[in-house]
Length: 329
Ligand code: ASP
Image (cartoon, rainbow, N blue to C red; front, side):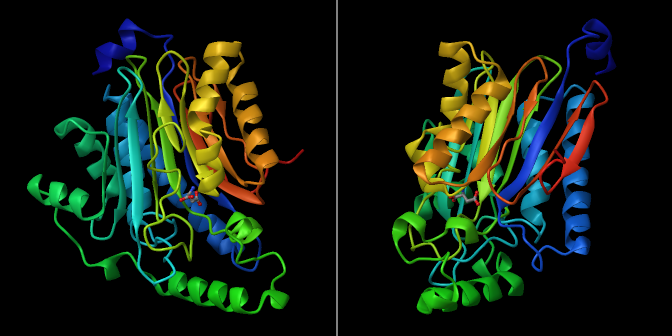
């Protein structure tokens, strides 16, 4: 739709993505691995941007982008998700349309290849916002989704991560930063790789989505922030779109994604100020992670308080970048 561009030449569009915040310390993240993250982030950004560039809706861009990250073993979503304490992948996802505040979410999936697509189907094809577990998978089958075996999601690297983590929990002396206490069982060791996207289309609509395998070694049935609207994901054309990553319990307690939006709506904060204040609050509670946010003017915020966060953005102004480690001061 080239005419959209000529009708509104000055309206910015674009997207921002993350591939998870966490302890990206060597030796786990080698220079080769960092390159692999950056390449995949760029591929996902370009796919989402292409949707927006041809006049497609922000929701389509969010789904197209997140599907690529879910299909990559590099990220903790879809194929390559972390394993729970029983060695099973349980996936959570959500999506929100900032033009009408409609939303869809799924949690505890064990057999759906692209949870973000199912979250969208819940939003568009059911009267509900959130479906979980077996009920969500029944809804998926009724709507033409194929089920895949749980093995499809599991990679040897994630199995090894789980073995290592469980070993450390048995021997806390070997890993003083890891504790079995629920409040800090994940802490600075928490696994990274949740994915998220916020897109702004040529019509000025925002959408946000998040997809994750949650936290490694989580209890069976544990649900984090990613599928909770207002915690891990939020979008409102009047303020911004947000997707979060990190120790989800804290993001739920801080209602993090909506908190960013509320600071803009009620306090008149800029996007950057609001995102930073929300992350500071999470830090004060003891949580770690990061978030991405985008508003209708094309302002981008990507704060995090962990060693790294895979992230990137591409805007119609020509600005674009991807990064994994903190920006140089
Ligand atoms: N926020 C996700 C969760 O708690 C995990 C992550 O982002 O790394 O499930």
